[in-house]
Image (tube, rainbow, N blue to C red; front, side, top):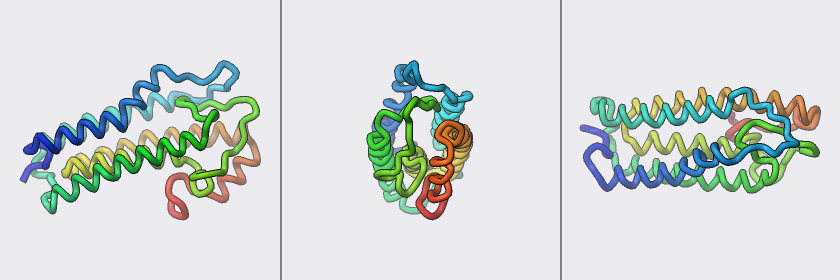
Amino acid sequence: MSALITHSVFHLNVLYIVTTLCFAPEWIGSFFQRPERTAQNRDRGSHLVLFGAIVAGMFAAFALAFGQPAASLGWHQALQFWCGIGLMLAGLGFRWYAIRVLGKFFTRDVATRPGQYVVETGPYRLVRHPSYSGGLLMLLGAGLAMTNWLSLLVLCAAMLIGYGYRVHVEEQALCRDLGEPYREYMQRTHRFVPHVW
């Protein structure tokens, strides 16, 4: 049995549309949104690493879904597909909610600005990086929707590499620039999943 998206044009088009909805604003924003001039850029290439890992992971995942039919997940493919689409949309909504709560402190590059403080409202009460949690959900959902375990594995590896480096850089920058309040906040919260991870 092959992956659902390889033999159903409808499901493939749904995945293309939802993938575009989830990731196109991110890619466009990467080119046009820059930190303000007074901000301290601490990115150390993390935005490029994250962007590259996600793009490479998505291309590889699609290639594997079409090129490795033996790795297809045959159990209730339609259910897996729609659960994946649901996770992608939930991740998108959660990501944008987290960005809205962060407000003026949100940047695409790792940067801090004068007067910045630790935000602990909304999803930030429970996790330090809820916008990344949303991104992880989107990628996990995309892998599931491809109904191919190799595609899912490649996307999981891509997100661990990309977000792993990004969070390492970001937390170092926030500890340096926000100091003890951020270090105390790190002691009270997990990175992506409340009480777990």
